Image (cartoon, one colour):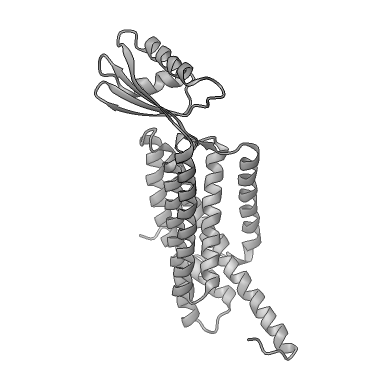
Length: 310
């Protein structure tokens, strides 16, 4: 399928404009972190686990709606027959644990007057688990980035290509996370999974383009590096567009139809799909070009001074 004919767009020539767009997105992300800050879920800050038994089976969505109307903001629900398990973020500075549980009971009693609810078990989950998860999340990203640098450097015989790829991934992950913070969505383990998915999607797109550039460097030896990069990007543009649009449609379907549980994951995938294409074409590849041009200038300057580069 060919949605548009062969293109001849000067991507490299417009690189500084897109560097500016990237800088704006990073600045927006940093501002979101400084002035708003992440809204960490109970996975990271701790909370309360409450097991509630209803007299009769109750729809989980009805329980969710009643708690939201009652002012309970951050919580997760699971059910089994007439038993509902609630995990809620709760800061002991605002009210005691007993007061919080009683507030939950009042909300449910008002919402289900003909279906008595009793609290079977209450447990407080401290932030220790959250600290462990935070550390593991950092390790996951660090090892993923290191592995990608090594793989790309080995495949393309240049550490520069690997570093440029990972810079693009860091850009995508950071900005995606920034949009999560910006809209006030909770940061939980699902967000970490979505960001790692974005990292994998982004590097895949970048490797496809880098592979085409490497192939063209062998074939078109008389062409300039500038022309080879533009030629390579235009060559994979259709493939990139079709792949990205397909993923985008899946993500947007999950966003509107997937329900509350997968909503944040789909939201990050929507943003990350666009950013993955953006960083591959307008960030990673131009960075490689800038480095190669700078290196060639340094080599030429050294040769003119009679210095043989090592």
